[in-house]
Image (cartoon, rainbow, N blue to C red; front, side, top):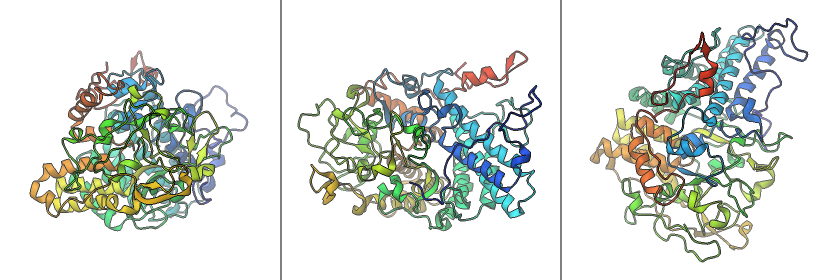
Length: 595
């Protein structure tokens, strides 16, 4: 359970729609409603700000319906739009369950796909709430100037986050802010400048720490500002800020940014206030009597199926292509950057759960076994991952299970939320963590600075992976995993840093290839991959190679095809285009290739 100093992401009882936008025929406000006059004070503004934070989980409005079929479309983890579409994972389950994901995974979806509309609504709900904070704050008279700047900094950070998500999903989207009076706005301008203006304001006006650790601080704003520059390919600007954030930044609770000694601590609720957290969406189990609406509900489908202890639902299975990337060279301890699928990791595809199976004995990066459930390897403290008995359709989705989003058996009482038919959990979603910052900083250095510095940042990440303290170990007694772990590694782990001078001697292209690969390993299954591939300009090459390889093994991505220019962005939801009609024509214009 969260400590009392956290912001509890509750759904507030006032409306999230703009107070100024509705001109009703009835002049008397509905009984029980809240007006601007009532909440235009410090307490009211702060409650509105909490509501703006609450929208981060994507579960507000229509998406809050647990049985409504779209609770997961607004998931902030982007497990569909970023991870599955990026080749990190198969959809999982079987071909008849959530079939709307299949065309997204294979890039033939059209604008009527309900997943797009669900995500759009969730993000604009967040935009609306942040704008309401700024509107009402302007009318409050009991705030000091310092308080106004801090509240505005938080609100503008959150608004920039929501728009950043909209931008990377759809590119051209309408900009609506606190000064907008006509809300049917066109999507005909590039909003990057407005996004960076909001992050700049937050960077310049937010404090370095806060007593409520769920709130954002100066350094989170700096990291996100630099990330927005990186997406715009403004590498010198990104590099300047990343270097400052890496050297000087600290968490909201005041800890200097550094990597956790153990990789797995990033995914444990008991360790969530740690030195690697830059910007996290707070989750809490068992706080809503109607279900896990605050317990990572957007990822509720993504647990092992069959006779697993989770009950549902078998989605989000790590791809074979992903797992093969964790193979390392026996001599160097480095990854195979270009021919990883020629060195595949042994798997139990087609092996019945009752048949014997010996896991891969070759050298592997230990982050693999915190990322994917593999047959014969400890699945946290739930026992050895059994393979086929926990998989809904192995031929469709492959042999692996998700792991980063899974709570431990030992902390099940506090971290599991079984308020409905599929599990929720208290595991926060990390929008940005320090390893991500280091790798983005490495990318900016390789593009506009020092290859030596870029390698230094990458090696910090690899050094953590190489630390035996953070590896997965065999159980003391395989029959009783709760008895604890032995001192014997669960696999043949071998991972080394890049040797001194490697990036500088081999050049920029090699350095970028290594950095891109490291992001794949470190951030696998965290929703970044598709958006990375698009901004690097290599999505067509990478994803079509993925379809060619993975499609020969699993049925889920067979015949997938990525087309540059069309699939770089998703289609504007047709529902939103229809709603934008004015004088017989839509105000919103569809993205290229989807008309």
